[in-house]
Image (cartoon, rainbow, N blue to C red; front, side, top):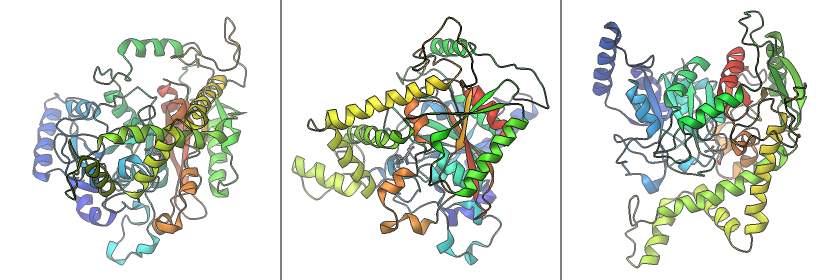
Length: 498
Ligand code: GLN
């Protein structure tokens, strides 16, 4: 890891703060002693991971890549990271991101974007044409770039509307967002609390699952984190629709039904991406799965609903940065009102300000019903759409969508265990096309169209690297989604694709 950091970090701008190499060395040596004496703490003991700058750690800064928190050192460590540390994981450092998680290309950061390693690895960085540099995706761009360039074994990111899956897709690594509530958000700096999840970026589905299993635990510090009892109930509910667990090496997915959501086949999809999607369908069929078309009619409303809800929640969450408690404080003036506005004008970047304005607007009394409430209704419709096509019931609501529940749920072909779609509309764009006037914010928001539906529904979703785009030689990711709480199905299908 250290070697790759020395070789590439300056160019890729991935790790912003690095842990002390001597300390890493010592921790790695103790772990290897434990392995030798059969006393390893877990299968992850001694691995090095990178953490997104919005996850609190007692050591190193937690800046959210915002001028507002540039000097912020958290007084505690996020639960998710604490659980990894208890399992012997070593912190390699903190990585680049879009400010507060708002963005899709890692260009909204106070330290300059991380770069996509795909065209960089194995090359002399001094000889590279910087104009050709690609975006690693965002907002967890640093996490994806760190894993893709082997600077760490795996990384944590956060996924509110696709921020783990999109960068994973652009960089050619696995990116997993669990069901909402599976992993504690305590110590994850809030962007949009009803959508925020801690996600994992790793080189393989199996490594992702190891890390997920370590972190997916009850946490009394986060009231939206599932209790052990709820986790039990979910496990029971999922059994309602059994799939043969038959160990058939030729057909590992026999009995599994995969839905292809028709509305995800949008016109903007590049032909090369569409052709990878078709290939993915074939691979799942060859593994014994039944593949059927399904419909999620509300897909086209998802982006509008997401940006209404996410900005509304962000405008509320970001009120805490007022210059009086922690973070940046303007020294321009000392009148209270002036202090707030100076602090916030100086401390937030352009995109964050845009979102705060949008979010404040949709929450004002004149537009609350028209925007915020309507978006909440659309969110519910999206949940219903997903529930209607999944064979397994939603363990939280018991809902099977708009379909009337009969005594034993009839499992027609139209009911599926998992969904397969592309993860991004195109491969990684050039960084220079994602800055300034080259990109219109609305177009940027539309790039999240394939990842947002799963976020609004709270269901688990994973981007699995699936080969290279025939047009530009860049990685393509396919997205696997499943019913709320059915992480195991996502892993099962994901393994076949990798
Ligand atoms: N690109 C989306 C946004 O800007 C997703 C961000 C995220 O998941 N944190 O809101």
